[in-house]
Image (cartoon, rainbow, N blue to C red; front, side, top):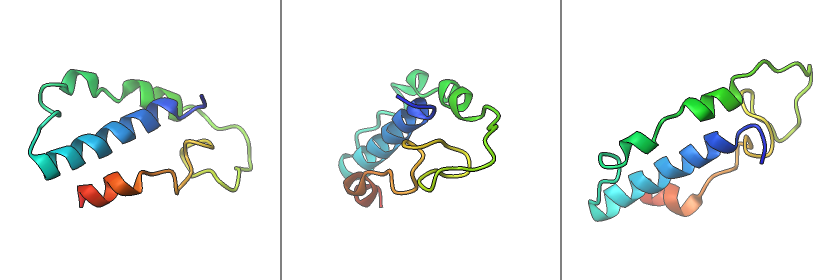
Length: 81
């Protein structure tokens, strides 16, 4: 799946849970906080990068393709506002 798989799944959990709470008032953060540990995500993206050059679709910290700057859910981001 790629080096940032865990980071992207955590990102989508946060996007969805925040939008759900803002729109419906349903709080999933509290009852599911034990599933929201970021350690696997951090372990996957904080390794030493040995390549001097990055791909054009990669961010500084993340690897492609999960690290793309445009890798987001527009609907969930709009709801989160």
